[in-house]
Image (cartoon, rainbow, N blue to C red):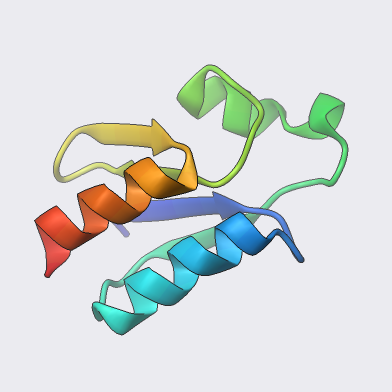
Length: 79
């Protein structure tokens, strides 16, 4: 899969991004992360920070955080 969304169960920002990707018909893999920031090593490895959501789109060479930025990118790139 060329797109991965790192998200946390119950995170409203993550849900908003996942909902938009679903609305746009975007295929992606979900990686569910730990609630404790100190346990989010994989997120830090791919994005340089531990916050979620993080979208990685390998086809476009994009890794980004912050839900509003991801939503803007999704609307621009996948609509």
